[in-house]
View: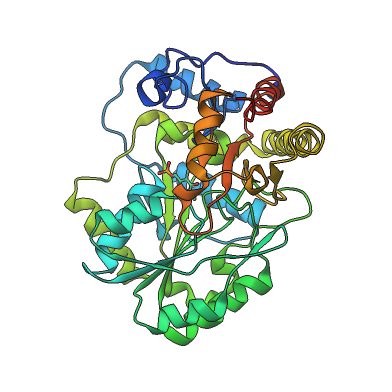
Length: 389
Ligand SMILES: Cc1ncc(COP(=O)(O)O)c(C=O)c1O
């Protein structure tokens, strides 16, 4: 069983954040949404079957986490990433963003510095600011079409007293899959300063051919008691609405503290559909994921070709991982407000504007490629009209 990724599924009327809130958020009912990171594809057929079967049961009472869920998660990471997770290291949360917020609350104090590497997934910034901590930017550096870490600056920022580093691996939005050498450079610094690292690996499975995601724990096994890894089946299998994430915390004391924070806000159970969906995805999703990655890779190739031929002001960065294209639009010669305004008003396409992602995002737009090719083609044809007054 697989999915026909070319088939357009009408998501209207499902309370979809992407499709059903267009008028409310942009004032345009017909704008094409290519911003938020969920996919327009149905989940794998085995997942749909498992959720339907659970729904047919009819009783939806309080739901815990069965052993089979932990085993399926462990087997997935063993078979796909060669990573041995002990099942009792896993804490289940209703999402990675809640876990990041809780980790900030648990392991840092108000006023502490937390390092992030912009341009980066903007809820990292919100999590730090909403919890009254201070953002310390360790900006990525652009060399040609590649974005790299500035490790000298990272060491300075850590040495200046930061308490925590949030790593995005693979990196949203620049599309990098960090190499062993890069991660070893980073962990060498973390080792010297004993800083706590939260490694957000939600995009771990979304890696294009020729690249390999390395869980941070594999790169630095000796640092495991200082690493928290956020994983989830939600990006990989389009289950974000079902809200299940597995946070891996090998250190007993850190895990105890984190679990205490969960209890303090009354978290600890899951919704029944999330659990069965995650388990089915991890048990049966290998082949589906292979087909998905091939489709996304072909969408990226389509985008590159289109930009070359019809939209030279937009230059897509290479896509090593994630399904999010990072478009350099500096050649358009406009400031961000004008460019975003034109994309929305003239082209009626809704992308995430670069500055949302922090320093370094200026002049860029992020575009979600996880959609049928006809939708991508429609968005690109519309975007080609952006510059027409
Ligand atoms: C790096 C990263 N972390 C976390 C999330 C969202 O996590 P969740 O929906 O589990 O809160 C996203 C979604 O795009 C993401 O890109």
